[in-house]
Image (cartoon, rainbow, N blue to C red; front, side, top):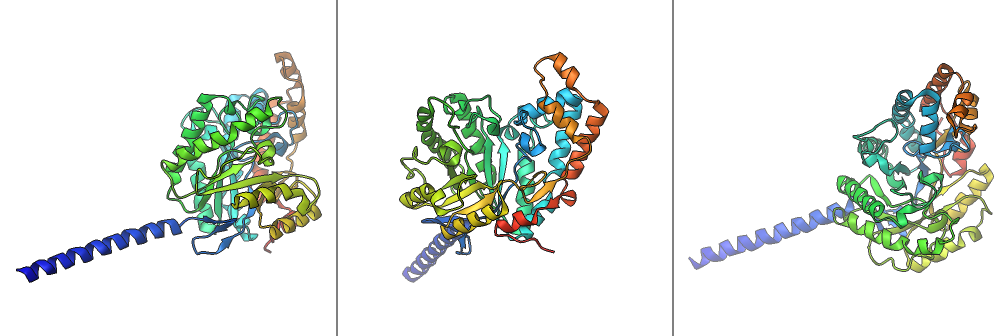
Length: 418
């Protein structure tokens, strides 16, 4: 009897040890699915260093005026209003639906992968995850549907994806790029901050087990430098990042959280404590200036002081020579990059959209005074012509009709397959 009890005990202990080992192994396997951080490096699930090279899908889920050729009409809200004045709300809604279906497709992601890129940054508007009016929908927004499609295409093509809330509730920047009302209300509004955290928690819960996603970039270019109280606003940034990160960690322990600097992602002085999470990395932006190491010395010093990865989320809009030189500088200093943008009207991107016939008349209307109904009536061109030009823009925006900008692509350290 004693022998039998000993045998049973042995079997039970062995089974318990095996179960614990299996759970431990399962946990390790779960961690191993995701990109992780080791000092200043990103590490792939296979244990190799990941140096980010890629592009931004700007304008697709966060329209910006200059990518349509507009100047004054420069935010998503302004563009939508202008189109409604031009062809009416119904035609405008149909335009946005077709725009979302055609501007970025599987073919675009396949092209990006073919160049040797390994990462895509996906800017999005917070309204895609609410029931607020946005891009042709008045409820049941399609944010998850749109991101799901990119996740699938990236998985099929071996690319990582960074989710970037480019337009946050209340506005984090106070300029056209965040589709705000001209001030970074997010930093002062409790209601906007709660919505900001709730949306990130919803996104993180939905994608917590998705290894294609490299990380969550909480905001883009917070706090423009124009405001007299900029230092007071800057002081609110890190507490907001900490709060949002904590909301994410309630549902998702797997993904990296990306922290952007103040004043166009260039000022990292407001950040005093990066110890509130063990999966943080920082993201900077740079346009113009000298294409030298000295131009990013501040980013490098901050990166070295916190011993965490630094990544250039946006760079570009310059000559091919400048971009090639800066790409080399970033490679030499271990700062990965995604160029801005992948696609826009004309050039200075990976794929240029050709201007459709009569688009100059749309631009003229967009730039005309439209502060009164009389001004709208007097500036409005023929509506049928405008509808056709908008349809032609959609057609020209399709990947098969874009023009690859080979010099631009080569300047990124990538290649065009023939």
